[in-house]
Length: 156
Length: 411
Image (tube, rainbow over all chains, first blue to last red):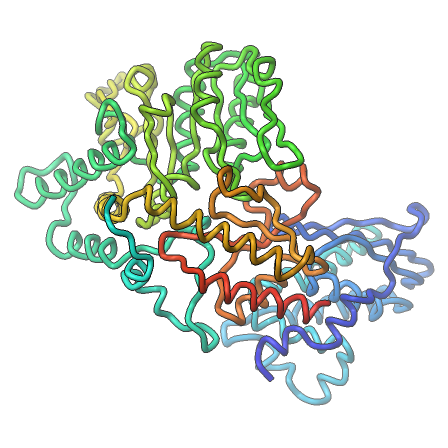
C-alpha cells in the first residue's frame, strides 16, 4: 500500500463523510472546550458529559480537513462510555502513536505488531498519518482538545 | 519587444526537472515563492567562490568588488522599477514583511500621531496589517480598512470619506489570494489629493508585469527577492527621496552610523542608515541576476504570457467542473493576475493539496496570511494555484487531472 493510500484509508473517508457523535450538548451541564489550528484554520468544539468518573456522552462540532474531522469522529467513538482514567490512558497512548521519533515514525519501532494493531481497532487507520508530518497536527487536534477539557474538569 | 519563450524559461530552472512521486514537478506555487533560474544560482555561487568579502569596509581588491556588486544590485533594482532618484532610494531589507515594518516603525512612528489613520484594505497580507496594529497599540493611530466587494474588487465608492484623516494609504498591487489587481494609479491620485502618502505592496506584482513607481506616482514600494526569481533573505523597500530623507533609522548597529561616542550616535546619511549589520550581499547579487533575467524576458511579455495562462485556466476550470470547483476571485483577466484560489466542493483545501501532491502538483492550501479577507468571504482556507514566467498550459492539464481525482476520492 502506498503512503498515500495509507493516509486516506476507507475508514478515514467513512468517518469524514459520516462523522459519529456530531452535534452539541447543552453546556452547562456539559463541559465545552474548543481547539484551533491557527496554521490551517481547522476548528474543533467538544462537549463532554462527565458523571461519576465516567465520560457518559461526547459530541463534537467544527470544521477542518478529512484527517482532523475523521480523527475527531474516531476519537469520540473510542472514548464514549469509558472511565476518565481509561480516556486519559487512550489519549496519551494515541498522542504517543502520533509522535515521530528520531528513528522515524514511532509506529515502525514499537506499534506494528498484529496484537498492537488489534488493540487500536479502527484508530489504527490513523497510523498512516505519521508518514505525512505536516498532517500530524490535523490528526491530533481533537485529542489535544479533549485532553485540555479533561484537565479543565479535573487537573491531572 | 524581446523574444519570450516559456519553454526556454522552463529549461533555465533546474528545480522544474525534479520528479516527485514518479512525475515531473508541476510548480504552481509562485505566489509563495518563485523558482530561480540557473543564472541566479550561478551568480551567487560565483560570488561566494571568488568575490566574497564584507562590504563598505575593506580596502582590499575583493572587498571593493563585493561593495561594487552590492551597490550595483541596488542601482539595477532602481532601474527595474524606474525609481526617479536611482539607487539612493532603494533600501535592502529581509523581505516584504520587513519592508512594511520599516515603513511603520520609521516613517509611521515619526509622522503619525494618535488619531491619525492608516488606510489599508480587507485584501491585505498580514505583513501590511500587523505592523499597523502594532503602531496603533504603541501610539494610538487608527487602522481603517477599504472593504472588498462581493465581486472581489476594492469597494471605492466611499474612498473620499475613507481617506479622512488618513496619513498613509497602504495597499497591495495584486491580492495574494484573489489575484485582484488594484488600480494603483487611481489610488495614488486620491491619496495625494487628500494629502496622504501611498505605499504599495508589490510582492505579487513585481515579477508578473512592468513596475513603474514614477508613472504610478507612489511613495513606497515593498517586495521580496524570492518572489521575483531571486533568493530568499533579501527584500526591497523603495521610498521616494523626499520621504526617505524624513525617516529616522530602523535597526541600530554597525554600518548605519556616521559616528558613535559614549554619549550617543549619529546616523549615517542615505540608505545606509536603514541597513544595520552585514547586509545580504550574496542575496543582492542573486537579486541582480534575477532582475537581469526578468528584464531580458521583458515584463510586458511575462505579463501577456501569464494573462493567457490564467484566462485558459479559468475557462477550463469552469468548463471541466461545472461549479464543483469555484474560483475565489475575479473572472476577468483584465483585472486579475495569475493567482487562482480554489474552493473545491466537499474537499478541504489541505486534502486538495495532498491529492495534488500525488500528481507532483505544488499548490498552497491555507489562509495565505490574509485572515481578514478569508473571514470576509467566510472561508477557512483555499487551495491556491499560481503561475510564474516558466508556467505552461500543460501545468493546468495536470492541475485539472489532480482536482478530478480529489473530487472522486472525497465525492
